[in-house]
Amino acid sequence: MSACGSLAAQPLFNNPLVKNRADPQMFLHTDGYYYFTATVPEYDRIELRRASGINDLGAADAKVIWRKHASGPMSHHIWAPELHFIQGKWYVYFTAGRADAIWDIRLYVLENASTNPLEGEWVERGQLKTGRESFSLDATTFALGGQRYLVWTQRDPAPDKKNTNIYLAKMDTPLSITGPVVLLSRPDYSWEKIKYEVNEAPAVLIRNGRVFITYSASATDENYSMGLLTAPADADLLDSRVWQKSAQPVFKTSVANAQYGPGHNSFTTTTDGKTDVLVYHARDYREIKGDSLYDPNRHTRAQVFYWRDDGTPDFGAPGAPTINLGKQAAKPLFRDPVMDGAADPVLVRNAKLGKWWMFYTNRRANASEARGVTWVHGTRIGIAESDDEGANWHYIGEADIELPPQMGGAEATHWAPDIIRANDGSYHMYLTVVPGIFEDWKHPRYMVHLTSQDLRHWRNAKVLQLASERVIDATVLRLPQGGYRMWYNNEVDKKSIYYADSPDLENWTNKGKAVGDQGGEGPKVFRWKDQWWMITDVWRGLAVYRSDDLLNWKRQLGNLLEVPGHGEDDEVIGGHPDVVVNGDRAFLFYFTHPGKRGPDQKKDGREQRRSSLQVVELLHTEQGLLADRDAPAYVRLPAK
Image (cartoon, rainbow, N blue to C red; front, side):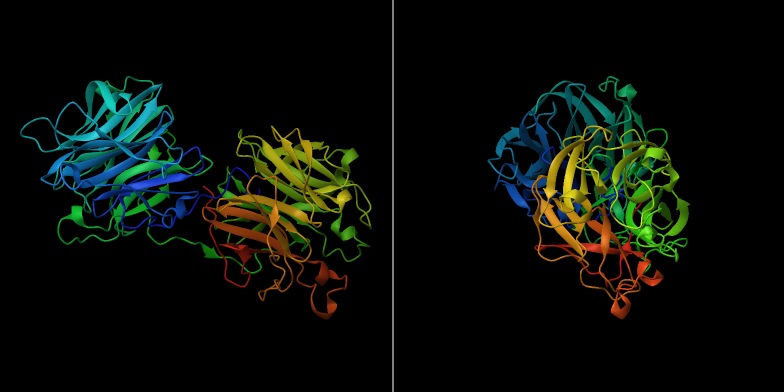
């Protein structure tokens, strides 16, 4: 499928994501932005930044929204800010001490009524009272079943105790709690008591009918680690008996990956809401000079986490700081071993196998007796598979596509599929079909919709009623507001790009022309770097358009892949691409006719007909998209 499908590759994060920022809190708001705040090493202010992508937060402007007082309350140890949007207003919950009594730290609240929390006025709303005046910190809040709760850390009330515990209470306003305060966890296990007896920094995750609260334990050096509390989501959360506690840490130091003291986390998701992300801080060294609390090198990191069969989170181990860019891709990436005519690639993740499959038009390049253009007719869709996340591919056969006689049946020509996975797990293919094998181009071409459960067998063929009876090269995108949009080439209208909309992937309404500044084939539409992009094959390389609304498209200057490369099978223009977005990286897959160059380029032999598939990483600049096809392409498309 295209990058616009529902199963983009799992993201890679630029770890460390934000340097010298501890106690990170990040969330994806309904406005499409990620908001981020954290403890600064000077402990003197609260910063806020936002970006359209997680990897962009490190370079985003950090706006100081509040500074500590010169004296009195809120004048020392400004820690652990958290940003929350509640009842149409923004709130920051944070911890602060006082210059004349630095360990008299309490919980405080800021409020902002602006739509954008980086604008407007932040108003001090004073201390958030917990019912006891004692050492308290690290507040977070969540809502469940119409009730909002506060979770925080506070010193044990016993006069002979210095440990900190996790507490829970209901909130009656964003500024206050009401009713009983419940003890959820105190340091019980040896791993929670190294140097200091600590339970702190709760973070809440509601999934699979349960409420999960992670917390951090022990001293803030290499011994810092995360524990987990769990309760049924439909239980009385103020009944301490419903909560279960992990006997072992669920996230701890990884010596192998040189990540020490991971903890004080928060949770977010990818922009589509389908992939869970753990955000935390850690150091990349063990030895600390002086008090670990004042060592500034706790850096914010992010990584995807997964779910076990029993519905509990599996955080794994803190990942190494160096990004795994993947293996260097083969050059050429792939040649079909049967017909040697691989073209028009489209990639899709096979969810059952946990691998990437690549579907492609397989022209009959080695059919030496084919007359006219019959060699590009009678084709079947080939499938290649990657065992190493997209760097190398091997042939696994043809797609089993069943078409009725009125569509050409077994003699039909299959071109340029696009594939998207629906919410119910079924796959939908949009295939260009020519009803036979012909020596010229003067014949109908239909857009046919098929479905599959396994990506191999395709049934339930249905011709779509689009702008004309000569349409080719569909690409399908799930729209942010719901429903789907298809772009395709309407050959009747000077090969302009048209579009159609659907609520369910089966019933389509033609909407008219999308791009008509010049003819083009193989449109691909995708979201990357906070922008919508369309790439089309204009036979002199690839035209690039951008849009803010998926309706109005502006073309950038110059074409991608118009200048031939120097690699094997890449010394010609590139054509008909697919794009796969992987976090902040995007990969352009395309095909070439390697023999169409030099003095023999206009001949019509096997060498001119054969085609190869290639890949290049896209580059984003102020001018738009670029592709350095001579640079090694390091590809990593995680498939699980």
